[in-house]
Image (tube, rainbow, N blue to C red; front, side, top):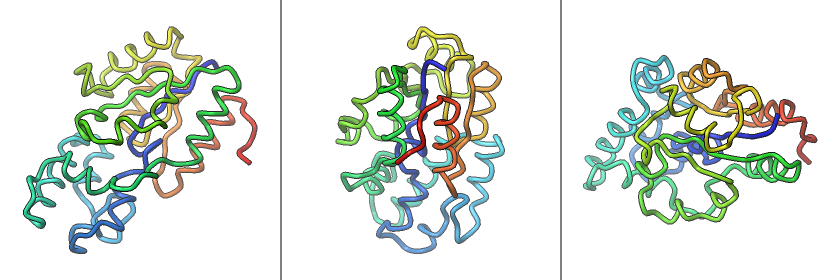
Length: 210
């Protein structure tokens, strides 16, 4: 393997559902958070099953949040509230990136929504994102996973064939698209994200995390 290709939201960046647990909002909003519960989230079930898109889900949640708080109801507004602190990234994924670089591997991102969700927020200029050799953002290119062109664009940026790249994502449909494109793929389960990080380490032949 010669490269690590990461999704950002849910993989490097802790997921909105994780962060929702401490959001200052009524429990009827904060307790509906995907597979993390405690209330059912059928709309997110539709995303995981490929019946709806992640963007549509978060647009609906943002509108709900806006109604509860008297805000604008936009996705960037909700994301600003969710990611208000300075440490929104998974330390184990930062360590994975650093160890991959130390081993001489390329480290890139393939995300659908960095600019669309976070706009000009400080998060988009966070030094952690500077660790990537390149970031391919579907909200800039106009091509979203699982469109095959999204993976082709990332591979083109890396200059590598698919079989030499380990791809990590938390959306089943995006992982399926990556496998169809020939990438070695690891799917993140938000109930145990560390398991996916360790699997990526194994595939990249990196030492176990300290």
